[in-house]
Length: 554
Image (cartoon, rainbow, N blue to C red):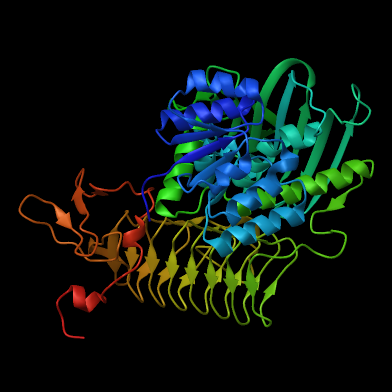
């Protein structure tokens, strides 16, 4: 795969100029395309070395252009993105992915068939505050999430080609789905058209989730002041993301105590969360380039854009029906086509959220409310509870039950018949359904066959739990543990090789060549690749067995 990425930005309006600036600063902008001659004159002044085209077809026919970024009106996204994929170009499409669910589905399928990157410009997914908030929720810092709401209000540009729901709400829907890691089961939406009778300019959308969480999103371009605020209320803490404030993300450890048999609010001082100083659009553009370069699935890929599109579509149908409650899966002409595979003996309940490319095999059951990521393989006779969370590219072998309280991050491998628990002291006579403990399996870790993970522990990223081990306490990143109870006996590389330190304390993986060191003692870190970075494409396919790497006879 070529590491040279030449991006053409198409549509050089208000937002397109920002996209062009960021790709230019990242050294990837080679072409600009807009039919407006006045735009051409301005662009030639700002970017004298960049090619300008008025004809989109000329951009697609140019072999020098490897990727396109579409900053055009939403109604054009489907046709233009489809043409780009057909021309063999990777694509970044501004929100929404399309205006028809069927068109979005077609784009996702076409990108998969062509082996191209399709990414949607859900910019808030790359905002440092949202990234931090998602991590806090995932780590349990806010406790159980009760409800959330978002206000995106302003007095500004009033559009006529799309209503406020399609213009503003995709940002907040994308964030909501990411923070809760599930898709709503029912929605209702109400609004009004006050400036132009043909275009709704204020909407309030309400969402219900299988987990019990409720949410609403209020959007308007008829508001006296600019407000961009997201509030998440949890059992332990409350979070406020205010994009107009100096402190973008603040946590409030308020709590409710029962005094004299009455609930009493106990307030606490807000705690500002330290954030990286990073422009979200630049982070988005850089992520797109990284995904094109390495072939990695984007955070806001086409499948994620399709999920947002389905929620938008349900809101629009409710809006047109005067605010009627709308089942998200109910569509004229039948249920939406799925982008995942389910064996005829397996069952996926209505309300389960399953990502594109996932395969669910014989006699397995995914319950309503469960969240299963993209490209997951679920083997035979696997049960996934409705409150379970499974990331992307997870491999679950036969006869595994993933219960409520279990969170499985990306790239985890679960061996056959391994056991995940959620109550430390179960008794048949004592109902502890509301007291499930959380178990977290960190990114890239491996759990061997017949191993048992006692609830309430965290298995670190890229850790390796040997077959038959019984894990009773947290396992560090990259640690190799075995036995009953499991004890650490060494370190494993990201590629799954046991590491040995040289005289300088450096450990080298024989397969990847990456170096590791304990910094500080007891904490292993890779010196050559960040744990969150994707593996380079050339290192994703093994070339020799473990015994061959160890120099043993097969």
